[in-house]
Length: 131
Image 1: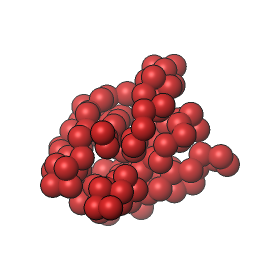
Image 2 (image 1 turned 120 degrees about the vertical axis):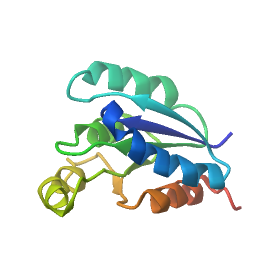
Image 3 (image 1 turned 180 degrees about the horizontal axis):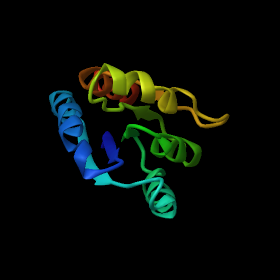
């Protein structure tokens, strides 16, 4: 089964996650939401990724703004693709916080996609839904 795990840094990210979920549903991709903070519970994030990363046909979608450690922690510990789709309140928030998602350390490949619909479409293409 093709699946996306949507990890949010906090419950306040749910409206953004729901936009991605609508696109995943349209593509026929199963998904689950989870709140996991890489700052407040990095061991929990690590354990969660390790518990699910061996599943076949999985894509990780991370939603975290400001200091986006979540995407990096997932990417550093996963073997499956990580798509970051950070939420931004406005253009000022975007300008201040986009760098935390774009500048990941070495060996932490994170694909950053700003539009929730495009994030869902990218997940579908990675998973080969239309093949």
